[in-house]
Image (cartoon, rainbow, N blue to C red; front, side):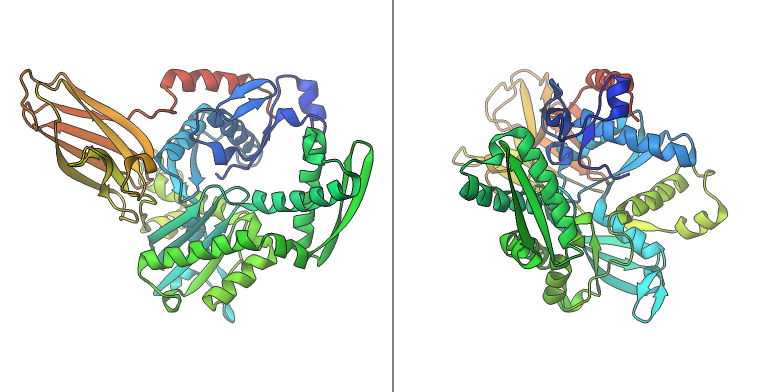
Amino acid sequence: MRSSAGAVADRHPREERDGPTKHEQPDRVAMLVKRKIGEASFGLVAGRDFRPETLSAIILAKLVKDAEVRIGPIKKAVITVPAYFDDTRRKATKDAGRIAGLDVLDILDEPTAAALAYSLQPIKSIGQRSPLSAVESQTVLVYDLGGGTFDVTLVRLSKNHFQTLAIEGDVRLGGKDWDDRIVKHIADIFVKTHDCDPREDNQSLVALRSASERAKRTLSKLPRTTITCSHRGKSLSVPLTRDEFEAVTKDLLVRTRFTCQSVLRQAGLTWDHVDRVLMVGGSTHMPMTGRMLQELTGKQPDNSLAVSEVVARGAALHAGIVALRSTADNNLLGAEARELLGDVVEINVNAHSLGIEARNAADQRINDILIPKNTMLPTAASRVYYTKTENQQKVRVKVLQGEAPEANACIPIGECWIDGLPPNLPNRSPVQVRCGVASNGLIEVLALDMTSGKMAHTVIHRANGLSDDEIAREAAFVRSLRIQ
């Protein structure tokens, strides 16, 4: 299940039926929810300060409602996320599923899901159609450019075996940024022509953003289009060619190119080692992406499966794999699905290094990395640290994600405490910390006071995370909505 970027919700049946549009009531629309998932607040929508998890849950609830029309009741789901999501965003995504009333079986990286879909379904090959799983072994680059996020993943595929080699990405780069460049281009022309700025009025800006997105889609098919902008009773129609669009967004495409090169370096490979390039995400419809990838890799990118649907297909296949491994659900699949999925092995890696905040000899806070980036999952690592003062009563274990050596330059994931330490504990008493990362990227921590033998085993406390009570409260709110 891959959620979309925006949502409109309301308590009143008539307004839902008639549909408050983003043009008429832009304050009632939430856009790019995925970019803010994991933060404490999305902001005001229809006068209410929403959590990103709640807005995501509304989208999920809508997807479930639509799917149930075709396939019947749905209680469980696999939810996909950008591969570069950190633990905070993954946990928030899982909470969104719970708020939507779903039993979240797993959180799956979107490029992994796409590779799974390409591998287990017949697709176009050179001169014939054959499943990737029939090939002995291939190294595949998955280029996933969605509406709000961007990922590049290297995957090694062989029959019934899918191993992620390296991940890189940008959770704040996507098709919306291409839209925004068109908005700026048209608005700047409007200002020069009419001496007023449509970006200063919310409704004018929303209409311009909508027209810009439509223009982007048109330019994916045609060489030119026209955008009309209206503001303060004035109107302007501006022609825009594909070449002009590509010129004003060139630096965004270059960012994705650099990311592709980076992930290859991390894996220690060259383009000669890459057998196939898979295109995923609606924004890869832009012709510039395919041309850039072919020039960079020397290979014709493969978009033979619908780029906007391939992740959902892979999530469905992964749900089948999970069901086969569950004694409660393995009787849900037929013989053909059992034969296809029964022996599939999936191996992922962590997108960010995992470390513990510590202090060095100069008393500076550093990121002491326990599990490096692109380590095969599931995994765990432990290290011994030491107390800083005599008679210390408790120890804080603060978990970080990131590559920087400085603690304040990394993402603080959360913390746990060992308290109630024995009295008169000498300075530099040893404390062992063990961090584990599950195959879906979620983290847990164990900490052991080696003097007393006391252990803290807890899911880490996340600064922006929701408690069970808060999840129940948000779930009740979502249930109160008429989602149609």
